[in-house]
Amino acid sequence: MKKKVLLTLAILTGGGATMSQADTVVLSNGDTLNGTIGIVSGDSMKFTSPAFGEVTIPLAKVRSYTIDAPTRVQPRGEPSVTGQIRGDSTTVTVDQKTYPMAEVKSVNPPKQEWTGAVVGNFSLARGNTNRFTVGAEAAAALRRDDQFNNDRISFGGGYNYGESGGGPGGTDKTTDTDNWNAFGKYDRYWDDQWYGYASLKLEHDRIAALYYRLSPGVGIGYQWIETPDIKFRTEAGVTYIHEEFDPSGTNDNAALRLAYAYDNRLSDTVSLFHTLEYLPAFDDPGDYIINTDIGLRAKLTDSFFAQFRILYKRDSTPAEGALKNDLLYTIGVGWNF
Image (cartoon, rainbow, N blue to C red; front, side):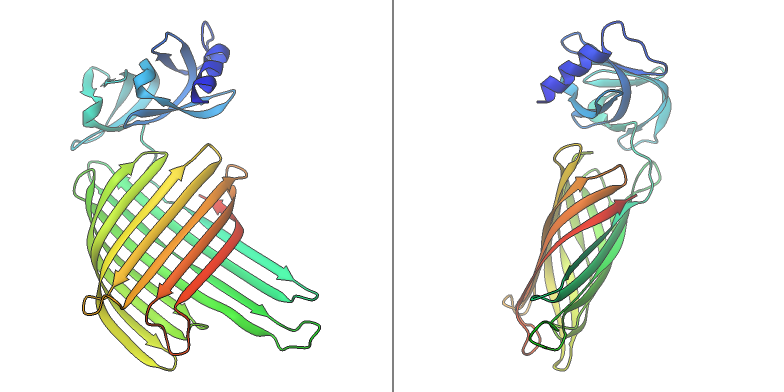
């Protein structure tokens, strides 16, 4: 499919076509593409065609490329440089200085600015079934990677509420969902893969009789993949968990934390995300907490998307009378920035 897209682009934008201020890519088969070159990192290049939008070109298929507008290049372990760009599959030249691509983090890296999303979901049933649910979640992150900083700051939270009853049988309305959470996290990279982190999470679930759970933690992480399309990291650390139940008292323990996060841009319009966190207590591995989710986002416009998400939580030692497992399905619409 990718080859067909590139061939179509070559036919429509290649040959003798000229464009004002257009970047140029010459493929290994001799075809020439004119458009806009985006991020070049790892083994791929983002390229935007006026006719077909953004596509990903493997660097192995690029004979040469040029970017006429002054462009930033971020070498590994050195200050970034800006200038006229000439490159190929193995090197990039900024003005008169040439760098092997193995020593370059990225060409034309994205702006270092906050990104994130706000998602809302809502459902209403009236008649034989009477049910109302509403939820919202938000998250933001800043990834900095320059000569001064190599870190990531992230925070967010969510709230879900639902009630049922009051139907033809005359039953009273009952609140069956009422929970919220908030988190913050700081990751400090030591090199391209290894980093240390500090995190803090606060949770409340009235239906599960959890007044609040506070869980600060520290640890190390490894960034296995960090490209514009795929990101995957694993983490291991120590977390202190303080829980207050209503009305059955408190629970405190130190726990091992094992976690991973995976994001995959499957196409220009659809992306997949998945996270998992496992928190077994040091003094009793049978006392543990699992938090995981998986979801899909489908792009509706440049700023809005539809989202389907499944969240699963398991507390092996819940409050008295509460269940160990919680499963939530949500479908909503979000705005990204």
